[in-house]
Amino acid sequence: DCSYFSMICMRQAGVSLPRLSKEQVNTGSAVGSFYDAVPGDLFFYNSHGFGIDHVAIYIGDNKILHASQSIGCVSISVYDYCGEPVAIRRYY
Image 1 (cartoon, rainbow, N blue to C red):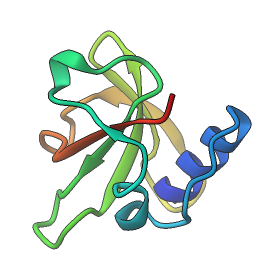
Image 2: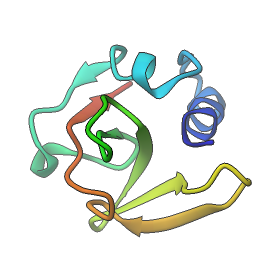
Image 3: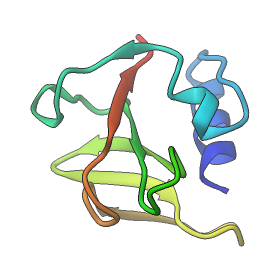
Image 4: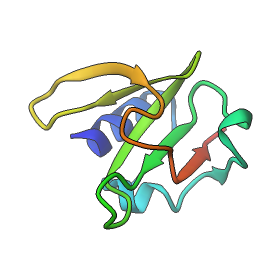
């Protein structure tokens, strides 16, 4: 799923993250807004109104890389495909 994907990708970059997106959002450093985001930042979403339920890796040019389904499907989407991110975190 999305949080496992972000955890594995960040591990490859030398960053250790917790397993769940609702835990990952409490790590790293806060980024003030989308306009301050750089590739490699994690975008966190609350798409169903019940807290953090999705995480994606910002790749620049208004796009994110993420596991959009729990069946192993990784895709590139516009950053706001499931709403505006509610948090952006940086790990370097």
